[in-house]
Length: 282
Ligand code: ATP
Image (cartoon, rainbow, N blue to C red):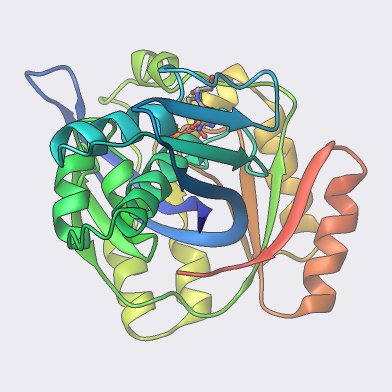
């Protein structure tokens, strides 16, 4: 049996540059990973089936699950003669802006690659995965990257300065498609991706905290005002920076010292049911 972990991602920045002819937005964003993981295991089968066992019954266990689709893609592309049983233990909040499904898909590709000893390089897995979702190539590496295009064009960079990350998810779920539909690109908003890039290069924690910016945040706050309240709560209780991840509604705050991080965690736990305190991985 083969095991893989699928870490959640957070956006340190997220900019939408313009709407493309194919309907997607051209993005530029810096993503990294945090130590909040789904866990997967993989076993060969004697038939050609894909069997997915998920520990949460509200999550699909068929083709609607990205991990299932990733297994299908691997079996088809590499002409595998056997099926696979996948178990998925979810810890990453669903529909949260943390790329949980994408990370599961990427972990499935890495897992099947190892299970069948295919020796496919990560670069090939990443290229293949882009057909399943824009965030999956990033998740194949699960490091730190500037992501461009639809999100699938990666420039891998150093890991960010070490930090505690407090993650809080409001009870509401937001649809990424709805957020992009409501986005007005004429509305001025400055995203500090270059500053964040430099901060990571220089290992400058304070500069990184100042650079946290997400163009989708205003739109998501319009639909879910709790996002703003959580951000303010985090900052008022000592977080060095706070931002919504992806299209939301999850908010993360950064803290350098553990005591400081615990303080933020306790403050936010009072008003938000799903709160985690983890380390930045990158
Ligand atoms: P992103 O940050 O990439 O937008 P997300 O965190 O917003 O991702 P996911 O948690 O990946 O969203 O999943 C959103 C929807 O996709 C869910 O409503 C769920 O039904 C479906 N889904 C498909 N595969 C998975 C999976 N492996 N885990 C959780 N949800 C999944």
